[in-house]
Length: 316
Image 1 (cartoon, rainbow, N blue to C red):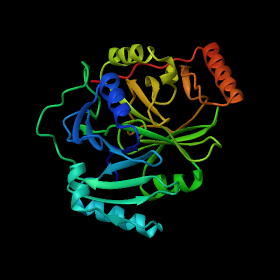
Image 2 (image 1 turned 120 degrees about the vertical axis):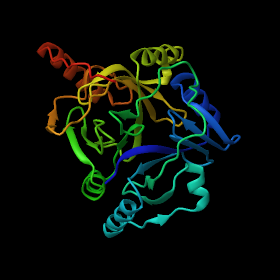
Image 3 (image 1 turned 60 degrees about the horizontal axis):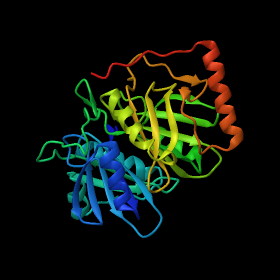
Image 4 (image 1 turned 120 degrees about the horizontal axis):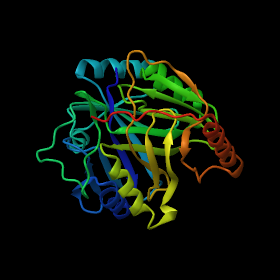
């Protein structure tokens, strides 16, 4: 039903800070729509993948999911409405800014804006990265996998899971309970399109993730981040579930941007598993309470003692 997370919407009081991080460190291309107010960020041949808009209030994150066409969009809207959510049709101005043929939006149980769209346009010009990189992985074998994933700390875990899993049809990839409860869901071969965590901290954005095609681009971004060590929210490490090697940058709005490489793909023979931890090595989560941070360290020591390893996934 849902094909991919095709774009994210970021409302921020710090457009300049976002532009510096997104272009100089991450390597995205910035197309300024309205100076100081609206910027399209590109990462491939599409007209936009991240839409920055200035706000004087609290920073916000929204998610733009795409479907195959108008009939599917209508079916998804009906399903969302039948589940009790109020859906609003987009304006021509909203569609033009996003570069989509059609769009509708609603709020999920934790208040995040969710957009349902189809027909995300190709850009008129080639992608030109903000720094020399080998590109971002948005496709695999000709399948659109979208931009990566979002990970949210939930206020109502059960309600959020019901919406994304039961209503929108995201499929469970795997789950974990240490050092906090989390479940991961996919809509295409990318290991997960959304992660939902029950950390006990209430609703909040944990991160969203972008995947490079080449490992060296992660390392070079890490080198630049190390010039301001306080900008690193999670150290370099490798995930146990999707096998991505990554680190997390603190965004100007306080939540994080994960920059990673070599995510494994989900095939028809995929089996859901219970994860013994969130990472194989590294990924020191500086945001965790001391007790949970120590629990995470002990999990890594145990996995190391067991000699647990994972193959490197091909990235085409």
